[in-house]
Amino acid sequence: MGMLKSHKRYLDHFVGELVDIYDATGPEIAQGDEFPTWNAHLIYECINTLGHWVQFTRKAPEGSVHRSFPGSLHQGSAGIPANAARSLGTCLYYVLQSQRVGDTFAMYMVECALRDIRYLVQPGDEEARKFLIRSIVTGGGRDNTHDYGARLAHLLGGIDYILLNDVSDLLAAARLAHPRAEFPD
Image (cartoon, rainbow, N blue to C red):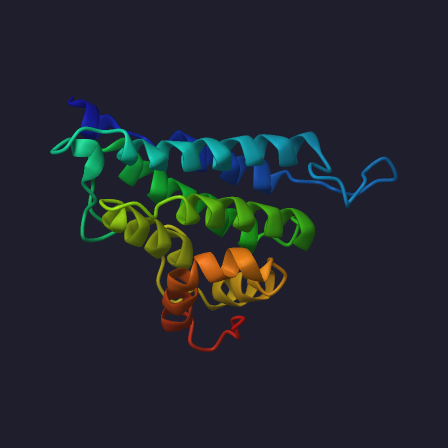
């Protein structure tokens, strides 16, 4: 079996499992900490790693599979950046859909993803940026996820306006994908 056919996106599965057992209750948990639990730290490491892998597109030579992004989130890709972008959106979906993960940590994970978008501004980054935005806005390629869109809008409302200004294309895409949600201006 070829590498592409046997490919599994493990990091989003890890995040899904970590979110399923996420527990930030108890007197020793400091909700305001960057990583209130060991679980939170592991989720961050997965999301941060995926963001770095999306950036590989900038280092890949012209014509490389790592500079190509499929037209749909439902199409396979041999490129690391495309698969990482899809997985990053799926990870955010798991975090934002969870009732266990509080707003402070969830907002931090959204902020990490926004920074990954913000770095894709050089000529030649357009395709990667659009694909990553599509993945984040749809939670890795899901349609009609009203709860996800509502929580994404809520969390974006708490993000620094300077960062939001740098990702206005994400806000526009989010408004189109989730017309019932109230996104910040």
